[in-house]
Image (cartoon, rainbow, N blue to C red; front, side):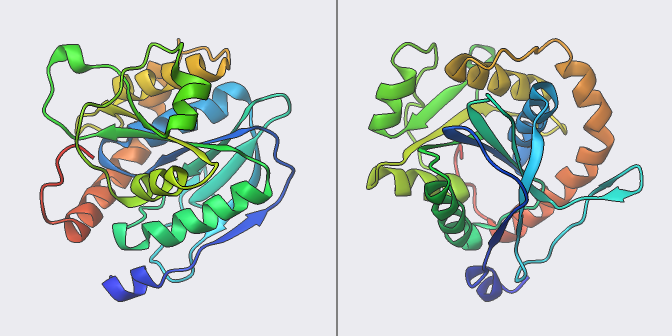
Length: 248
């Protein structure tokens, strides 16, 4: 892929239904697919309905399908009386296109009166067994509103890039409450244990009442599809980011 074409990529958000909710919770195709698996699980367990999708005419795309039926790779879901709108992105967004993607997404959330954006992410990092928990990187307003009473520790130090970095940067200098929930992930696809930790954190912070019991069987069901996707993501990640980028 030409890096210049990715830099100039445009993203269009197409609404097909009404959204309700005060926060957007997003998961992307990245290492371990924990964030993607987590938000996919939220959609299923909360019974959310598709309300839109995102297109990127300037990027190489994929068209996932299930039982012979194709679907858009980047989809929005919402449900009545559910406080979150969920973004499921099976499309790998390269770092060079991250700002364009986040600008389009956050302009849409502003128009939709969504005041918080959360990214669920499994991250590649050296860690001990005791580190198998969720950490946060969040703007001050989000911490005060959501995390003062939550059992989620801050990520100690480091840096982030891509869509996560763009969302956090936008939140620093605006009223947008922005947060990345990150947990150590492993290379298997999907990392069901990491996804479960992310689901439990979002459930706790937003009081969603999600049944986490079926997570293991759910992960097994989507494993074959996500294994192929993980190989594509890892290849794209290596092409876009040849250097070791620490934890995020």
